[in-house]
Image (cartoon, rainbow, N blue to C red; front, side, top):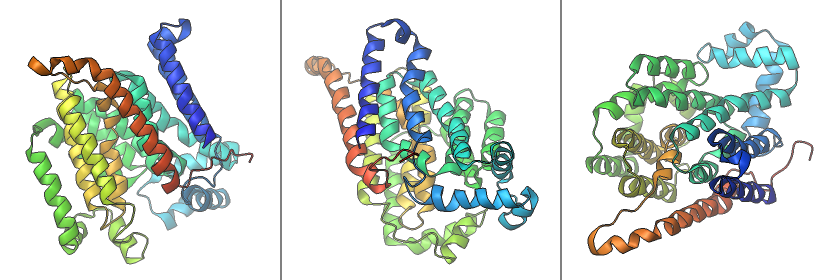
Length: 364
């Protein structure tokens, strides 16, 4: 756990030095790069045994299979749905022929997208990075294919904000060539652009939550209809995805709901259009998470939509008026409390659940 604590302490120190206009760190770009760098290095230098078994058991097998066969022979077995991911794997193998190099290179697009998103949209780098570490960082230890695709989807967020649907669609299709479930993010554009966030969103979230627990068969019926990749149904039939997955606890759902409520009530700021986009993305994330006790894949899908909370929560600011105005001076204290809560969540919940503690370096 010590490396994680040192990284968190480092983030706080760098942020504080930047606020004090300390030479090199007073530059916005320099500060965000310096804050992200140790997070990236910790991911790149990790043992493949950290996290769940995907890195050691699944992706290493891909590496061995592609190493010993041609790309097209491999795709005859795997299918062509995620062609670009395996083509890049084969290209890396031809150049480096080293699994560790492959893992290091695959980390780059995800962390580049995270860095760019925080740089462009965050009001408080420390809050954004702490929320990222707490909620999404450890997935980069094992969800390699999804994280590459997710990096591309994070870049597509700009085109939702800029009202450029064609560029958005093209990036989502590109992401789908790495992870085919990325196509589900296509729904983000019409919902975020044409749906105004209001309290009806909460009603929909709770209705889905109740239906998922009271009538799971109804959800499976619709999954069977709309599973355009046939991945979910096939994996259910073979026992890879299971019903009643423990990962989708009520506690996890409440965490997302609290993040949504906080973003709604205290993180609006002056960017009303982007706030509306973020709130609709959080709504979709809560809905998919509510479905995850039925099919665990929905838990992973929810990550795609809730990711953007890392910059939305950075807008945290209370703005009381009248007799309550005196409470506004406690805004910084509340920010500190929020940071402590997310650090605690990371240290005492996420690490244990995802098998990343104790941290092991690649040479360990």
